[in-house]
Length: 126
Image: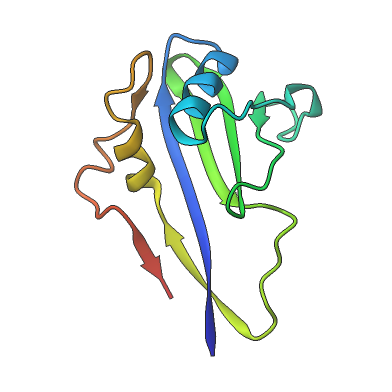
């Protein structure tokens, strides 16, 4: 059977910036400045969240959380408009450590890299 990649990322980010400041930093570093929006959509009910409403290489990016000691969570997963082909088995590819490596050392944010430093850059689960 064919295999279809299901990429995921769930990365904790700490910053003194508000959610829009973090979103701007992430956008500039990862997706060429495409703006995050949608705070008023309440996609995670009562938890503040912003997202990019564009299909970027098949991904959707979301930043959610209250900041402070708990930080924000950057999530990356397949965009809702994508569907897996019927003749393919889903294979999960965890890229949190890879995304963390791209964001390490970026000014005004700190990634939770201790958990990721001992992992490979990607993990594939079949």
